[in-house]
Length: 179
Image (cartoon, rainbow, N blue to C red; front, side, top):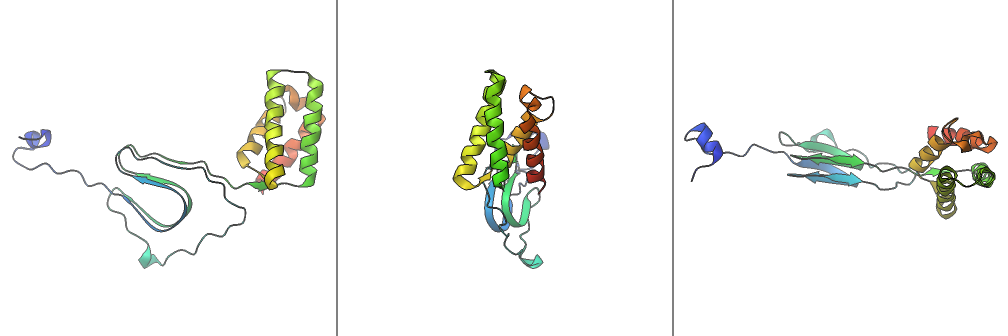
């Protein structure tokens, strides 16, 4: 029996193309996948200020086969190699918030009630409640939640943006995300 490759190449035997894998020196978080249909996804939450491990010496950094990936140190993220490879890093470092920010969120939530019920105000109120719950439990809030709130409250995006407290919250979120 001959393979399609042998039929195309005469009498030469079929040889699978060389496929590289993933070679990692130090892995302290993240997701890695290799091979057919590979997928890797990291949605972890990392504590603020966590120091990565020291990198290995250049001679200890793994070499990847052709078509593969060589990583010296991986402290998070996602890597995938091979046909169908897909890597997604949706991880994030939570952001610590001040009492001032908590107060601003609470004020905004109260002012939202003045706008009257709508899908928009309900969705925004639910987002604020989720942020308050997360902050109450951990003292921190996920970046993506802050980004979502900022987008909802940015000038002109929603009726909630017209509230005086919305401007304060947007300003504080911008400062929190900056650093």
